[in-house]
Image (cartoon, rainbow, N blue to C red):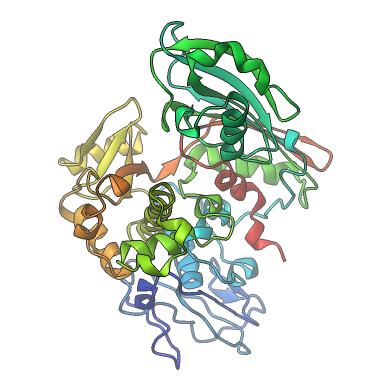
Length: 460
């Protein structure tokens, strides 16, 4: 069955998503839907609400039978429609729990891909726990898991540093000032949250060894140091261990909390880039898109410096990945590979899917995981159906793959797993506080995982 949009505004269709900065709003003023029973909650049957248009490739995959109360008003754009369809697809996917749309989901407002990480999609049918994070720095502890330990020899000095209340950039500037060296001489493996207590390696030239006591203060402490042969670079960490306290929970029911934990252990969570990836003002990706489109003259001068330009273009790549991931979940589901998919082995390694039947079994047994595109010159190429799907995502956004090659090392490209399962997830409830411990691979966002618990967008 193909379902279609019923609306007086023909522009309100999924095709309008090609514009990256559209505002997406769904306002179901009086809708109360029970998808499982197929009835509105006042138990009267009315003609089904028709949600998706022929422009959406997933329209033949599902039947939408969502009768609504007769008094309703529709003013919508695509994103909120996407969420409804996403949950319906999950409802019909093998080995995935039944989901139900409720009023909280229908009240979604004004979201774009920079905010996908706030949704908590895999636990959207469960009550959001609410709560607050980072009320004090000590409520958010992060410890880097290094890829390698310093060997004790070489021209660089690895400092095991604890910082609190400082961003990674502020920490680097602090070190540069105290040691009277350039920030370019300082290496880090990854950036850490500002409102947190973080422990991580930082490399400086070994000739500064006699001066490192200058770095100690209220915000920075040197816990140990050891020489190594190379400077640290972004990516030289395996992951991060977290100890987080969520304060003032709205829901403390142990059964609900247990259900959320069990689902995350089973399914993981979508590996979206979190909102902090897109800057404090949320507009870094927009600046990157202007540069990508050849309109660099329209961006503020500070963003034309190479390092800032690279950051803006990287945010645009992240934005496109978030868009790709949500559309993949919607149109392809979460239980199947595509022919030509690029996948990572959990034990290491990357390859393209050629024998779909064989690799599908490995995917379901958690030996491999699909890897979405960070579009760029050196992105590991997909093929067949997967390649066509990626190109279609770019086309909807108004870009061609060749455009990224023109930026060379500024947009080299890579691959990113589309789902993430935390290691060692443990929890404890103390009054209205939830204590969580887990480890995530490098590049995955704790705040995206926390959204599965807190479901902040469902709070009225």
